Image (cartoon, rainbow, N blue to C red; front, side, top):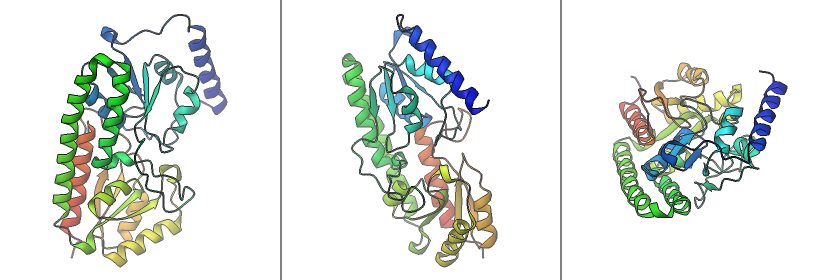
Length: 305
C-alpha cells in the first residue's frame, strides 16, 4: 500500500471509531477489561501480573520490528476497545502515541521510574536507550508499574495482582542470578558484548560487560562502512571470541565483522519481540534465559585457535 493509501485507510478507521463512539466496542470474552500493549514483550509481562482477571493483547505480532512500526486500521480499532493501554516509554512508543492520542483509555508507561542509560553515539546520541526490559532488575520496575495500573483499573483484583507480581519478580531474580553466575567464568578481557543494535546497555551494565554495537537503534539499521570498521577494530583489539545479532534485523553486517576477525558468530539474540509459541522464546523469561545462556556459552568457549 502506498503511503497516501495507508494514511487514507488509517483516517477511515479513525472515522469509524468516532462514528461508533455512541456504542461501546465489543468487549473481550467474559467481559474482562482489555489491556493493550504496544509489543509482545510488554504484553507477556503484563499477562503474568494480570492473571485471569484481565485480557492482555499486543499491537505488534511475534517477530515484528517495533522501532517505527506503523499501526494498521485494525490496530487502532483494537486500541479503541481497550480499558488500559500500556507502553514502554523512553521514546520507543512514539509511533503508537501519534495515532492514539485522542483515545480515552488511560495509559501506563512501564519504564517510569527507571534511570535511563543514554545512547552513546549516532543520531540518537544522548537520548535514553529504551531497552530497559533487557535488565531483569529493571523489569521489576515494570512489574510494579503494572500492579499500580491494574489496581486502578480493577481494584477488586488488587490482592491477585500483588501475589502474581511477587511471584514473577522472584522468577526475574532467578534469571538475573543465573546470568551473573554464567558470566563469572568468562575471562575479564573477553567480557564484551558485540551486537548489531545497541539494545543491551542495561543487560551489559548488570553483567559487567563492555558493550559494542554496529548501530545504536534499529532506525539506523543500514550499517555504513565506518560502523563496521569500528566494530572490527574493537573485536580485534579486545580479542572478542563471539559476536551476535538480533532476530528482527539482518545479520549481514555482523557477518562482515566475523569474516574480518577471529570471532565466531555466536548466534541470534532476541530483544524487541518474542517468537511464536513453538519458537525459542515464546515468553519474556524465555527470552532472557535464551540470550543470557547464548552470550555466556559463546564467550566462554573462546575464539577458535
